[in-house]
Length: 359
Ligand code: SF4
Ligand SMILES: [Zn+2]
Image (cartoon, rainbow, N blue to C red; front, side, top):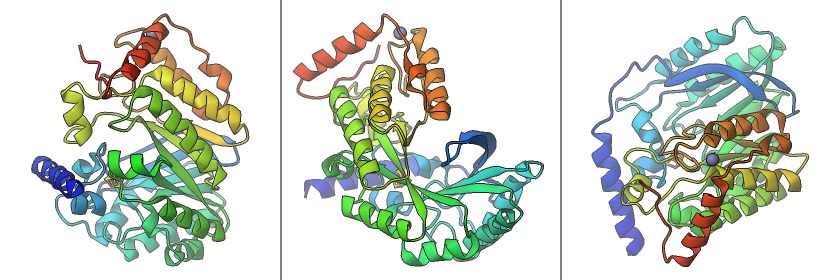
């Protein structure tokens, strides 16, 4: 019953916010860019990222979605056809026409493998074009994102009909391997069994699963968030994920996370916590690729240390360098505000509920 009330609350909050969603060109992706990246074989090269504009995540429409996610705000309020999606892809792929070797990452504001978002015709068009780039020897690897329920035999067989040999990786929002945190605090609607099934199917088709892990979901303390992230990453490698990508929480508009943050009952993670997590996980899994997203750092809504402290940008750069080089020594940053973090954790542990940190 309580769960129904909270779901109702989430849905109402989402619906209210969706009224502010703006129409935009259905033939242009939300964003697309080329950047330096690390490949699964640990070499460094260029990658093209395409964020396709779709109608958005089905889970967010049906249930109110995850408590930290506002992706639906980027999605299209009007239907997006297969034709629109093909044009979006054509527009983006132009950016790498002069490169000899690159990887392609195709994201949506939800699941690329869900036909509700990407109709089969558009999906096959994209895979066919990528298959040709593979044949020409230009495509190094591809990455897509999907909820685990769409990682099925049929969908993976379909990918491998076009993309024959190169690495294919699917990013899955695992968020945590603690099921209570995943389904109550994050409201993900995904069981650990769903995730393990997806990993096993993916293995059959030689497809990797990149686990996205959320650092500091709602309702848990900084200390528990550190432990949860470390345990979840170790578990992700143990069950066969190809790599781990940490997403330090950022407070997005129209989310339950923003609701609690604005009441001073949530604080995004400290960068000191992220450093601790990355060092611990990488030392335990030296042969694995451990990555960390830095978007939102070091704003008030994103991960930050003492607000305004000079170490914030230094650490942001160090995390970016770590993701590319996988060298934990680059994370050795010192600053006197580390004491503030230690004090915060100590005080929060004495409190009944997690603390905010607004000033
Ligand atoms: S995090 Fe993923 S599954 Fe959850 S609402 Fe956002 S897009 Fe949907
Ligand atoms: Zn500092």
